[in-house]
Image (cartoon, rainbow, N blue to C red; front, side, top):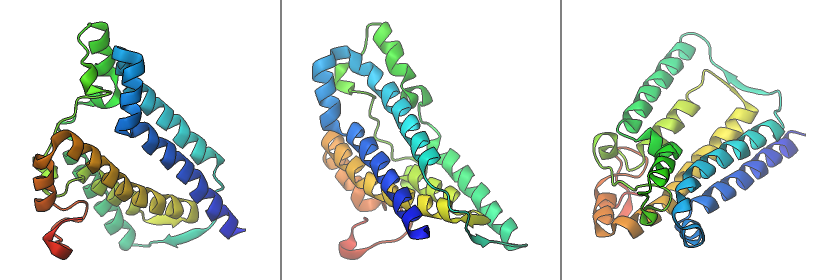
Length: 211
């Protein structure tokens, strides 16, 4: 049944999302750092590899109902594809300046073997970015990823359910991520929150604050 398939997809994604968020928490990282010392340098690499494996498990195990939700025809398919391409350019803009070695976890391992790893960094060096795409929204990588994933000329049921789950996860994840950033950067990040939207550009919500 379709309802059962959708329930299983959502349940499996929730299991992935929970493990991914739990492993990313500062509390867990600090606990590992206390026990492992400088070997916390390997944590980021472990985190990324385990996330890839868990997501691959979710993808391959999930039921994939053979149902097409919509299939756009000319010229709407071309327009949607063009918008998707623009969102990809936006994603590259948002990623610009990111240290990919640090993001993957390779740079941390290099510093460990060079004997100059700072345990206070936990699993990565935190940088407060507010230039470029970060002037548009506080989480531009999430924004452009959502647009890129959602702008599809053809949409099947599995992909639609997965897209909705990912979008909700990005929003909820941004809340937990900002709690960590406030703990690290304090009032400076709070001021940034009050002047730049979370995910929706140019939109001011209630009480003059950006969600």
